[in-house]
Length: 190
Image (spheres, rainbow, N blue to C red):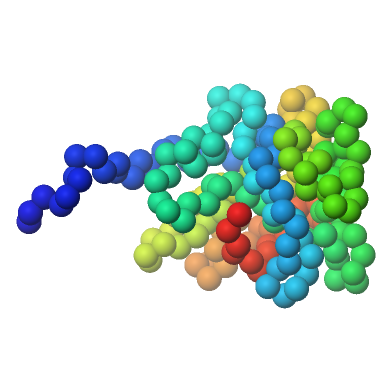
């Protein structure tokens, strides 16, 4: 094997320790209105951890990603409507937490909706989710629900149970409560 060009200057992939499941105080990095593949209105929210030992984790991951098509490493999707076309409880919970946890902020409807949310603080609960990659079962840690920041700081929010793959004998433990982020049928870049 001949040494490839630019071998010395090429960064190797660095795996880091996975994010532990649990509640975190996050900052909204970006938010976008979009539609799911089924045409349902939703928001896509990019997050970073703002406090504690994991603060800045996703900014660091993004900064160290040298791929041309890199994406923000922590996003959550929230449908804005329920099956009947009314406001979903998950979306209402998201907005209530943003209003309650950011003094002086109220939801801006219409044109300035996303711009007004960017930079706001949000309590987010992450859970471990099992996935398969090249025939091997692995784990990721993703946003699962939102909670009030005060409840997180006071230790009132528990670590959610792991979500196991159904087709590997596991039971999917998706939180049936309406304030959990729904499984969204879209994989869209920010």
